[in-house]
Length: 634
Image (cartoon, rainbow, N blue to C red; front, top):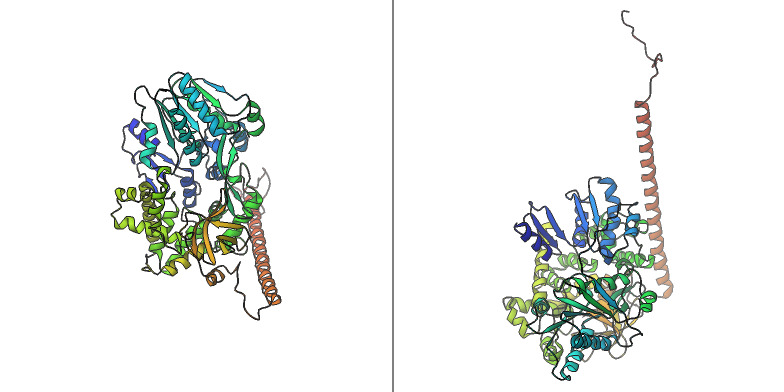
């Protein structure tokens, strides 16, 4: 968005005219647009409507070294599109990518190296391994501040907790010094309010040095002027998906050498700089990968596979990825799509799967929206889905934790975190979408406004794209909870012991998150469904709703059943065998259908070849074609 704005200003044209942008749930382009900036997710979504991307003549993919999920899928799709579109130019750019690898993937595409205009950066490693990178970072910042020349400092940390700890310890040790020169300490992370984030871009007061403590977002996405020193912890948080238990884990892992290069480069934007790496050269060589692990090899692929299926790519294991994802992850994701009804027993896209693919979000959330029409609660579900599609709306500043927790509890709906989010949105709406009201109740106004934009876009897709009328259940929360169950029955857990649950499918033990509306209940519900499972210090369920076990048996019959008297294990086994035989027959029918279509296609090709060879037969001089030859004069 900011790049599009900058380019429109330099070209002296209106934003949204010749220069526009498109991000998730927001399209600021027109028929006049010649240059369009967009996310990789938007471009991937556009391939559904226009498989060959006919309206584009040149596509530039920047920051390819980050290997985002959508980027990798697009790289594979371009390999199929380019032979059909000889006029299309694809330019893949990055400051630190393995150019030879990308070149070979596209059959030896030409490589160009454009020298950068950054200033030289001195890289300094540690002499011995560091035990505590937070403590080491604080010491390094104080050393720079007290003994080095002018220039601001950028510190890379793993997440909000490490950032806040670093800022606290730094302020504490600075105050214990005897009349040090002024140092402005500025943290930045995603959950921070926008007005506080904006402080890092303002110049420090005269005679004051600025230190910015950030996550890896400052590697490429943010550029802070005046940075002369970089302190690199050498770690970042990665979201890693475990397909066996269906859980995302936030793991602190060493960064790659390419990431280290990006971080160091931040010190040389405006002048000569210095990068202090809180690890040894040996650790860099032995513990760090040359490039970051591609997201496609460590994340859930349900949404991606649904999109590829919608594009007509059925043999997903043979799709040409730059780095293929693990087979277990593909199998697990396909199984989840099948359980949601997006795929049939032979892996083909179902009508409901086709409708789900039109929504730019997780398939489970898409399923909720579609089923809400049937349940008569689309107004409520659209709000809940919108709130789940943005970062958390609750703000918990470290210095006012008790006050913010008390404000949050006022919104609790005891049986459901999903309904709590609905309650927050409705209260915000009742208060005329007030920013001051958000501040009083420790809510992120920016996240709520974003949720409102997402909701408006979903309403448009549902009412205009799918010609559906919105309905409301008018406070019948059981209908809403059952509707939520239609998309998340595969993520269900049963109470086991004090405050502990166990997953009904995987038997993995898990806990309610302390911030859940259900955690304060005296008597916990027997059965719950959850939005996602996140591993931090424990395995926590995030965004939980209590459900009736009969709903799980009704909606998730592929996984669950209610034990009935007189229903023996033999009868259960017989039922399962019948279901298995039925699936086997369907698979054989599908194989026969494909074999018939393949044979028909081959016969058609042979017929065309035969017809072509007859038309192109060469007649030699003096030969006869079999008919009577008419001679002139006779």
